[in-house]
Amino acid sequence: MRVVVVEDNSSILAVLCRMVGHINTAAHADYIDCIGFTDPIKALTHLSSNGCDLLIVDYLMPGMNGVELIEAMRAMPEHTHVPVVMVTADSDRNRRMAAITAGATDFVSKPVDPVELRLRVTNLLELRRARNALAIQAETLTEQVAIATSHLRLREEEVVFRLARAIDLRDGATGGHVDRVAQSSKIIAEAMGMDAEFCRTLTLASPLHDVGKIGLPDAILNKPGLLTVDEVTVMRSHTTIGAAILAKADSELVQMAESIAIAHHERWDGTGYPHRLAGTEIPIEARITAVADVFDALCSARCYKRAWTLDEARAEIVRGSGSQFDPACVAAFESQWDLISSQMTANQLQSAA
Image 1: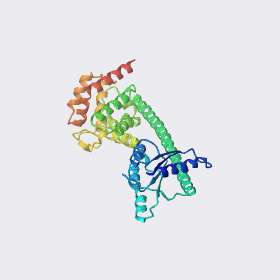
Image 2 (image 1 turned 180 degrees about the vertical axis):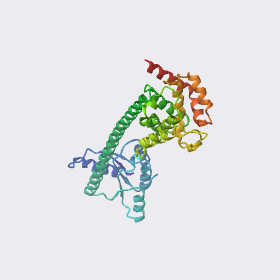
Image 3 (image 1 turned 90 degrees about the horizontal axis):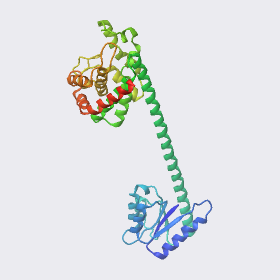
Image 4 (image 1 turned 45 degrees about the horizontal axis):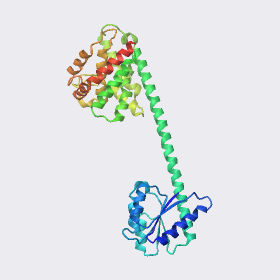
């Protein structure tokens, strides 16, 4: 334990340091490293760069009195809870109140009684030791919680992506579609200045945009030709089915996934489905996912269509700005074109291999 003693009288300082040092022989006491200062300014400089478990300070000192020293020390975050004993011959109540207000923990009167000083110092160091132990325990628990949370987030991510891939495969895709939609959605969101937590949640939630297709008949879902009017109605119901699957969740991730599932086919001009929302009535996560989803769908081959080239798909997204898509989302998409196109190419090559 570290004890700092500040007393401008060198003789009294030496006596106080010897008294504190004698406590090292007391039962159950840790070794005490005691350092003394006659100059409060030098003591404060020492405290600014060194740890301290107890400060013993005189009140009347030249340049800076004991109350001022305590106030300066308390301003240092690492010394906010360090116990302080003020040694003074002055019994003036106002000065004692000022010292308590500044952060003094206890008082010892001059001339100092060695037994009294030992008892007060021993008690305060025990309290300090207990507080340090609690702080270490709290830090350990915080680290353990952070590790556990990290593990849970990784498991959450794995479960979501596996579910999304299963839905994607049922839709006749390769499973790479959900990965690319997630990556493109994240890139667009970051370009729009969304915070890190929103981007992470969107990356996990956007792959579930078509979760409602699990409730569609295979004959419609995998039909190679054009759908009839009635079949289109059934196909469009995947938005409401998806929202019903994900509804009433406590998880912010699942709540965002529900929002995307129900609204990723809404259009900026209000002609989309299922609720014909327009403009900013459409949740931002759904507007972002819509751009990423349509772009990847255009670039992907299906039983009813060929894969468009990247430039063709890009031109279609730009053409839909202000009608099908949020212009801000399209602008972000355009600003990150090099990154989006390169990751699309890399993923397509990986899928082909």
